[in-house]
Length: 402
Ligand SMILES: Cc1ncc(C[n+]2csc(CCOP(=O)(O)OP(=O)(O)O)c2C)c(N)n1
Ligand SMILES: [Mg+2]
Image 1 (cartoon, protein in one colour):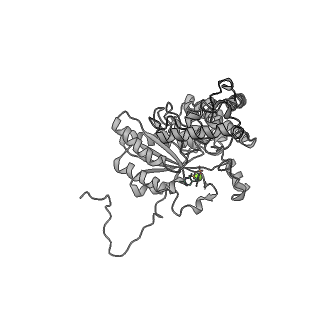
Image 2 (cartoon, rainbow, N blue to C red):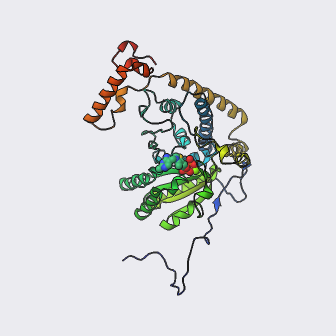
Image 3 (cartoon, rainbow, N blue to C red):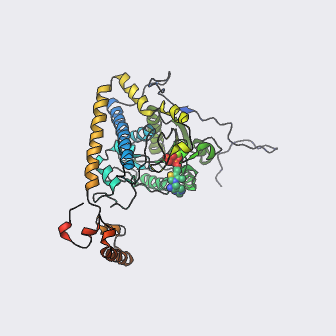
């Protein structure tokens, strides 16, 4: 039988261990004021990539502000913000190759923005209109993009984590040098799926990077009520996996950590766990009100560590960005989001048939039967379906109206 790795000498009294003797430092390069720590060294970020990252961070902030406002105006049913976590999400994405796979949770729209998901694509999904690739069958924020190697979001927590291990195993077999980044919250890391995924990845040595956004809360439950151990990073040791804890509001540190993690994953078949320490500055979702479970004072303290401000100051200091550019870009992004939203909300809903089409290769008889029953029902009660009824019964005259 193969030996375990333990080389410790046997003892003759019971000796317990709880990991308290292991200290995991926080890797950070950029101070909250945007200056570098002494000893931070040179970053491998070039100007083009740095600007692309910052643009995606700003885009995500603007998108989130607008869409949250749209939800409050009753135009959108639901929304989730990335606010405060942009550096963790976008800094890590930027360290990948564009063809690497991303499997995220639901708060990672910044990754898509970085890869070039268009405002039209965001809006079509959010409004579930006829151009939405999921045909309106998902709630808002469940984006997906085959072209951008971004697995469609699924609501049940942690499902994407073992999927990432499996997918990365396939990437290893394919031998094209790609890896998978899976992003999830610290709450999701309490699911059994997280542990199964880490164990399998470590045993089979697959090119996967597990990025936990430790943002302090799982909805209203603070981390102090979620786990007793040293955060999420320490869990990797049980699986003999490389692990790093990083300041998640420091985009440079996240970028460098993920870059090295990718190298380990792809070149050395070492899966890596990254714990990005960050904070969810906004509510959990449009259905949540954090004032019931956390203080304004706590929020203020984290506003001072805003990842956007931090990167902006660093960029300006280097002469890679300036305040005029910031103002112009912000205004043009606001206009773009608003205009695109107005178009998207006017577009027709998906055809009723898409409820059952492209789910199975061939639509099963039972689903066809249910669709027929639904159509008949709507036909009997058109007044109850004011938006969809006119074009459901083949009334071509009204086709094209929203
Ligand atoms: C299996 C499962 N259990 C519960 C939920 C309900 N739920 C949705 S989000 C959430 C909190 C997740 O927190 P975390 O993973 O820390 O992510 P965050 O929202 O902080 O980004 C819960 C409990 C769910 N979607 N799926
Ligand atoms: Mg969380």
